[in-house]
Image: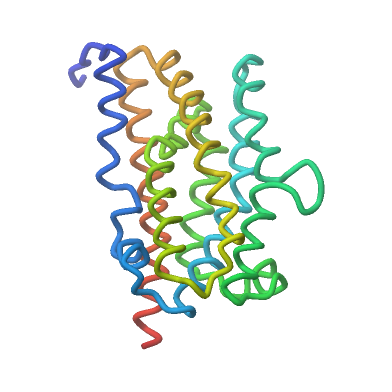
Length: 234
């Protein structure tokens, strides 16, 4: 049998979770080029159309976590995420705000919603994330969401870059990012507390870190697929 290491204290465990930032997708060459103002309209459209698939699957991922969780107090804390993305009515919510961005970059809503531009690599990455949430223990699903630790700063930088370098974009169309920054900060505090409170053995802590590393791989793989597709079309 392998050696079982003692559990980390909360500070050490949080430090391990935060160390996965090294693989977060804001460091991908595609996002680096976006932030430097080096993308053209076609490249932005490919990104928006493909990330739609990720956005629309987030409520299903969160619903899978809720379905697997036996603790009502955790389910109550997690349910608002579904309403945030789906909205409480048609035209409301994070997915609806993403479609506004799609309008701004020159896509029709029909071509985004029917996913005609969806790349196989993006579909595979996102589907693997939803499958992970459905099949792994609920606490690992929660841990995988902790890319929110890094998201607010990355989205703030992205919003500044889009406004600065892409003046042809309607700035009002960036409402998804404007609303998401504060929301992600709030959700991060909640998810981090759940993970730190429930992962109290070293095996569960190691599993949580692996879950978060898996999520960073999902996000990175999405951008790899987009980047490779654009390079092939040149």
